[in-house]
Length: 359
Image 1 (cartoon, one colour):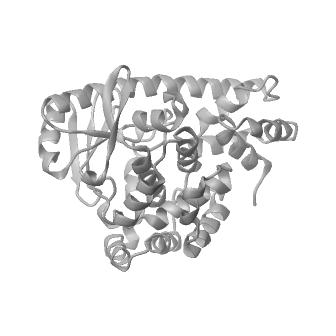
Image 2 (cartoon, one colour):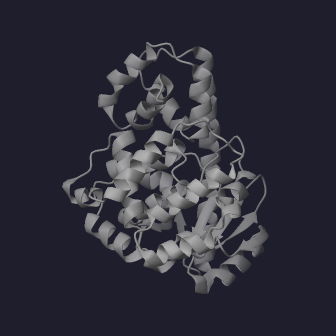
């Protein structure tokens, strides 16, 4: 059941770019709100910076001072961490490029700038680098040479983790998604643009490609965080140059069209994002509509870190329905045994701290 606290979070997640949301936000602030619930859910869904930004932008926010101080402190902490990771990102990408390893940055600082235009508005905990499989061993060797300590290669997830000083974690991927969930999405499928981060060039997926990646990533985690929906809405809002023909072509080629459809539907449902006519053709999938409705009803259910076998079965069924092609459903069924469903989330959980529980 939706509560006033849920509505407040939804408005805050979009009010930073939707001035028309402010009257509704002010009206909610006049109601009796449980601010402990607001803060807990904002942290759980990794939208603390968006909540602070939206509430601090009001002339008379009507928020208790201790709550505003907590939000301000969380925003500053996240901003400092984000700038530190942005600096590390440019250093590592520059070093790898100098060693002849083409490297794509995604999620983290690069995606924060691409979608929000601001490093501090998105929470993230580590750096994600994408390289072609043929360059993976060279890149991994170079990262070890830069003083990072290598973790075990996780072949199913197509990633290797590296730990650095002061809680720095770098994830080196040779594909954007785990084997069992990736469909045909590969690193060399992506087209890139060059972002300037701190005056240094960093390769990052084009907005169209990033939209497909964001929808696939949210689906990978069964859309359990509002942040991933906010990312999609922000990208559509801030990048008016989105090439929707390219979006459709990449989604069709990689078997991620239903994942894309669900992501767009959730952005429209929760963030009230206005989709252009070119995006309407992605909203005709009846199964995607049913999936988006199911996810919407579950978005604010009580968070349960210890999931039952029944929960894991439901997750597997959801993952199978996300895939429109039979071969991808077979691949998913074979690659995601019940005892390891969402194992990637549990593996990453140990890395979560107070700075940013996000991917």
